Image 1: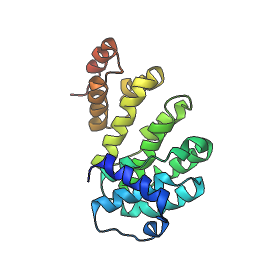
Image 2: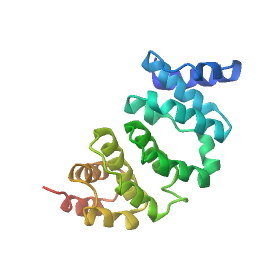
Image 3: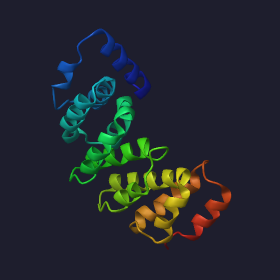
Image 4: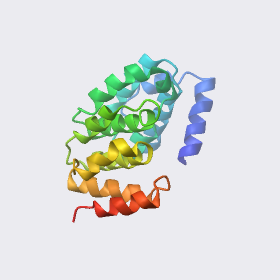
Length: 192
């Protein structure tokens, strides 16, 4: 089943039945069950329960797709509390807990709620994990699109590891949200 269909199915089930018993059954056997689990978490309304459920689910997330599809709308109403959880998550030893924390920082804190210190938090994550470094690159490329003046110094001063630095530039160059002039400049900052 495709992701949009699975998300719709989760909404329908959430309206009609008690899906919380499903959330208590871990681990799941199938990829789709894990994605459905993530969508059920998104449908919860109470911030504290979402935090409890996502943290219980973290050890069972074993791929980037399941990790990235979870984005509870309720988080928008709890940004002051959420930032403390994100700071915990990015210090985890679990790849997808770290990745989820960075994604939440990218999703909810690069627009009106942006603070330059958030760039520092992400730049200080040290990992050899491909899926962590790819999320750091995605975060910084998005930050270049949304908060260019605050972000460009991290690229100019080469504050990221070489792989992540070059991936950030590549993702930024592929973005439609970054001007051609900025893309030309970013190309000059690639590390050979």
